View (cartoon, helix red, strand yellow):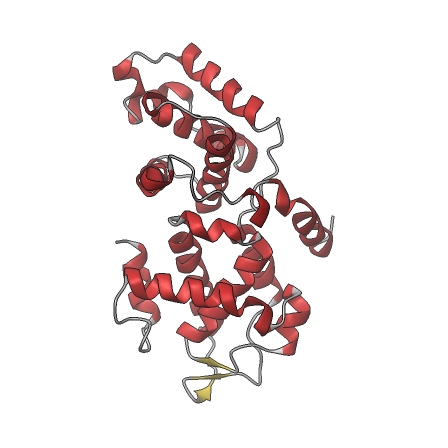
Length: 262
């Protein structure tokens, strides 16, 4: 399958996990969601999972929590099961963390869970997902955009000609904004392609690449700048809220790396 076909498949399937119609900001777990996201990201890092695998696992968790009321005593089990299932779908087999290792790492074994009860948790998650594991987070969509090229010969960087490292810097910004928006549930009101395009715009703005948007990017993403302006403002305001003062001035690619580690 060529990359264009893969992108069309993502467009077709993106509504399965995130869409304006599934956005439920009143869900009871929302006030605690960021703690779960941070915890899952930490476990994923310790298991050396790809960042995209963690993003997929959080889509699983959000869909599960929207479909049923999960007792708080089961949150950690369900979160770990989502990570395990995402790894089995997204990662090479040798990269999937063994269940005994997950039980030890997450301390689920300390509260009485065994490999058998963990398997039961995985089956419960799969049942509530309808056994549909093809999830499309914005980070997947951005991977496609970046592979096609999102900077152009006529672009300028901070008023000067582009340098060779600009595509690399754009990717660092895109990864940073993907991870940042993952923390906040309100970004699930946007389709993944919509949010990915807004993140691409935010990355160009943060890096001071001009023009901010181009006809080539409209052709690539399917969005005019005006269509993503609301999502872009949401991304940018959340960025300024989390990192006061940074959005109002140019920040170096090195500082983005530092912020990602915070």
